Image (cartoon, rainbow, N blue to C red; front, side, top):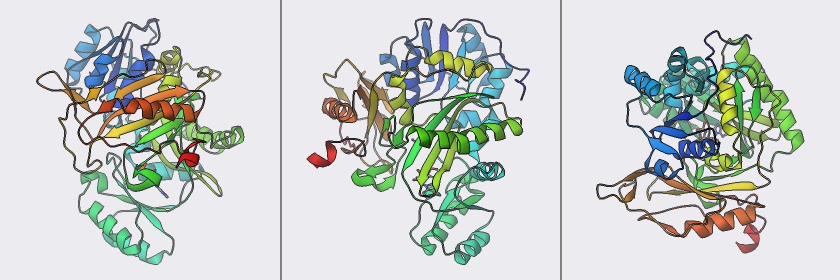
Length: 443
Ligand code: AMP
Ligand code: GLY
């Protein structure tokens, strides 16, 4: 595929970087990007209260939907590279718009973002390219859903087709529950995102997240990661956006990764090319390692959260160059990600009640935190009227540590987490249990 004629020119400078988004993911991207000495400023629209604690970072108050004002501001700030964090602006075509205005943008256009904003489209895409994934049925009405559910004897998963902030997947235990899930989606639980549903064969196995930075034709892989989606220890309770992660995931050896590249990653890139989609951004492969091999559970058009917070401290100062190369379509394909000789782990602290109802506005106290290989990335915080750091979301902040092995990583993370307090703080104590040799000895 030829590189799109709208390829932005290189200004050969990377002084001013803009990140769009307000979560822990975006703060960790900012933290990794500012390490490069060419970078003078990292602006976040809108960022959160934690953004200001990151070197070189500044928050900008502007509505990204007011596009003319946005372009004026970005020209005024002489922005050299834009990184779009969340899926919604990508699905709304913000990357296309900014590229047309001659900005270098890391983030796919609306056509590429479809891998995330339409699950049925993504499943068809995989089917066409023979990419291993669970069997599926695209369903347009409750009647049709009931017929399929009643006619099958395998367990199913029910998914709203469109974006649903990570809440659109149901894993029912019975046919009745399955029908109730379909009913709630068709009754408008997720608005237009639920006009279509996808029924999927329920598959089993450990999950792993793989991230490919793509320039439209070539890609570079980041270290793999494992998220912890369930709210409670022993992987119990409701699904959340993610309660913690570790990287790299030892579950995948070199052979496994080669198989994933051959069966999943390369065919995905080829299929995007075949569809003339000039994908310049990250593809997040949510994989399940089943008995019959790796299968795609989902694609996302963005970095995972909290995987991103976990992986970013493993990047060296060249990370921003990779993002820039992707934005310009000029990766060589031979780039090596320089990770330190360390592993990384992340624990998320949440508000009481998350992922259901929770309160905000509780003061956060941060005591003495290790200054080496330990980061706090705020996810949902703000500054109160009297200038205090307060909670402002379900997932409040993450503590991320690096060390030689995962036992040392999580020992450090939990020790430092004791220094952080707010009313109703909740976190899992068993993040990384799969890779902590001492965990089961102690517990
Ligand atoms: P998602 O919101 O798409 O990340 O899905 C949430 C979680 O649902 C995944 O991380 C899996 O644990 C689970 N899941 C999704 N699809 C399937 C499937 N076909 N079989 C089993 N579990 C699934
Ligand atoms: N960590 C899961 C997600 O970002 O969707």
